[in-house]
Image 1 (cartoon, rainbow, N blue to C red):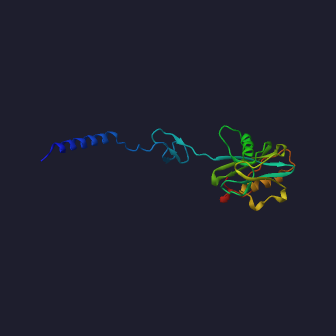
Image 2: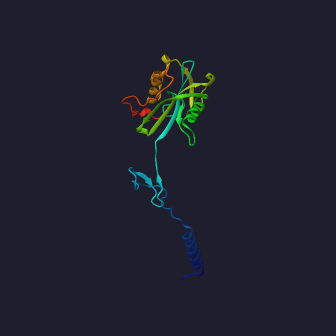
Image 3: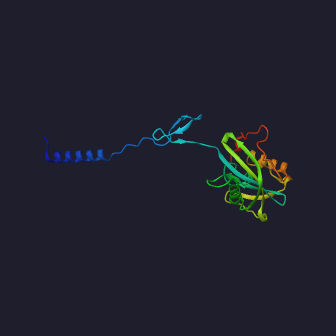
Length: 208
């Protein structure tokens, strides 16, 4: 036997069901570049959006920096961040959008060592395929010899060549740059160096 209360309960339940169906939402299908394939006319696999055809090109990162000196001593920064926190490096880092390599090298010195640099020339261009990185490093002098630790440095210091803490250098490419700087000493006109013979930076410590 169906009572009026039962009928009212049934109508309420039916209304709730319809409301739920009207507001229920399903997750939208994935969008953006989600399919990895070789686009027409290309030679490498890329992430492609099947809906609009957008191709996500991934290209090497560019690092800029400088071997900077004052009074014959080399400026090094002890890293306050990973990777290789606590190890010594030259002021260097990734380029930002819309800046030149020279502007980027000066900015990195400002950020890491609170130093203003006078750039002399390009010391070296290194390629590290393992991490898809190109490094463009300058020879430079420190304006007025003024420097101090920036936010990314635990400390900064000028080192005589024989006092450089070689066992605590952060990355192989820093070794290369310091060695090449010494080789170039006294050369007014310099052809930029490249990776030392056989060196690829394949050591895991070569990031950054």
